[in-house]
Length: 334
Image (cartoon, rainbow, N blue to C red):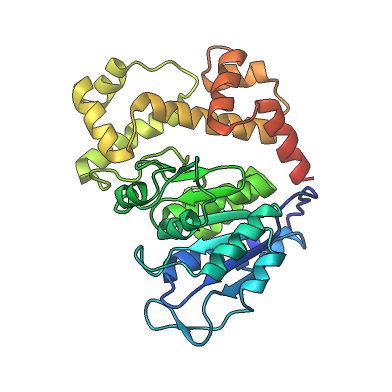
């Protein structure tokens, strides 16, 4: 049975921000705009009737063109921002391009009434111009982080993360990191299983943590290295509950510990220990959603030394306890 033939009923809480408005402007960044449309604007009948309501708000009057010469027809003007629960700024036409006063005022008013505002890539310069990021952490594409910090000294600019998800102001790094941030928003609004379903339709990794590095020095490993590490990854997935020393893993991969650390980082952007922790936490999530096991049993099954250690890592990684996670995901999937 195909995924689209299964209707998943979701019941967002009364506070779920469902009305999403994405900005359109002359010189629109097509990819960033497409990310917002794909995740929030695409009809998803498999989720029932409780999905996002989506609209496009024009920043500029008259004809607007996107990158690639596409002409844009919006649903309305900046007045639509007054109706939004979530506003998305999909890039900006240039980091030196001034932000219209009317847009700044509309964003400030939206935030004041409780709206959530998200910027993708260079869209952070629009958000910064409003003053809403003052005293907060933010990120953008690694090419722009230095300039952003110079222009807005009251913002703490993080130059090596995928996204920064504050309570109602969120920023992403480069264009593709916007997908990660938008999936994070879906995960917050509707739970892990729904977010993973959206990711499957996009054929992408369900969850990349916001603190992950923007760049990996060599994202594509050589064929031999890829095969060797692939076998190591398979082994680790099958034996997550066991303890793994660097020396034993290196021996299994036929490398020295130093070489394994270097090649592992080149292939994944992280260390074996952090990779194992992340995979164990994903396994914990699956148990919490689909089993009746106690936290103590799940800790034993997933390789954590104790339930308290599991709780500590889970809260650090996901900002909620395992019990809260289980309760929330069962609620949204009832």
